[in-house]
Image 1 (cartoon, rainbow, N blue to C red):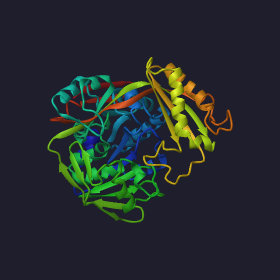
Image 2: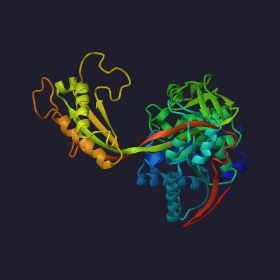
Image 3: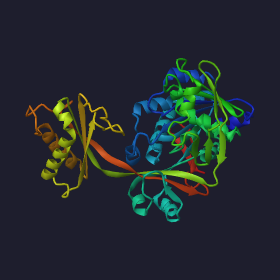
Image 4: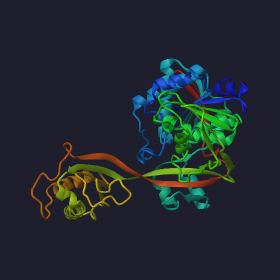
Length: 474
């Protein structure tokens, strides 16, 4: 019997405490080890980690690469894998390798197998894939069972065909299916963050609303604390309530900080939408247990009439080059918008975009590059501005050529009242124009309605031991 089977056989269930240790808000960015060890000392029943997100943008899904460094990713995986095996409790990891597509999942599994070989570890591992074939997605789109999320066009075959990778965001059900196979370790592709942390409590019959609300908060570890951080977080669930405690004694869960984090990444402050239904937290209560811990109760679970899955895809846009420049000349700053447009016109005359199309984009920091609102309401100009100029073209050479020409004409652009023929613009380093790799965009960000997600997210099991791993899809 392995970790999941032992946990179920222990008789742990509603009416008893279950301790869920959230080890990492995004595994691979560096787990604070002291707090994690403190969490292990509390004898958690399961260790959970989120490993990815769409937050880093579409480049990682499009390219199939990780956002985190191999060195730190391997370190973090080593910590949580050996910690879980030493305690004999399940380890659950979701959205493997940043974006959760097959390349990310396989890269994560390679790390895990290498750690097992070097440390002579043997364990049973369930792997859940999240890739969705374009042909499969076309069926949903053609049947009218897809809808866009936000300002994006409806799905069509052309859009689906252009995507480099397409993943579905699995919910709790597929983790429960994996737990039934009695693994020590579960590693999943793209998954709902909450599913990673709520799956074991749901599987053991704990209150669904409380389990999911706890998962929503602890998936970011100690971010909900004062002061916020990324240290391991222990969630202790009993009945229809749970208690939160950071494993770093310098961080406190207060009712206000926890309630505020319940709104994290939510368009609706009271309703959290999941594949299986909606969590209503409008009547949730947040109470202090002591100076460092809070207790939460009162959420309500509303099952969905039909299962939905969010689908994400990224497509290549072109190759990107960037130019970095700055100015503290008040005349340049005052005329920045006009200068940008005049430089753009000059560049287009020298390198006509109709011959080989490109996009030249100016971000003027200090004058609206970040703010969504009017930036100069006081009528005062900033003391300095930063020009981040990007060009996206079909080839890297073309993109770099465009920003190279832009650099020269931005540097020497003449305008009324200019006192210097050079030196109005400063460059932070040389060369100031840099190639920035392939540019991607999210082209698929839709919900699909499904009857059963088992075919979308197959589970396979491996017995990991040294260099050998036997796998079967179940």
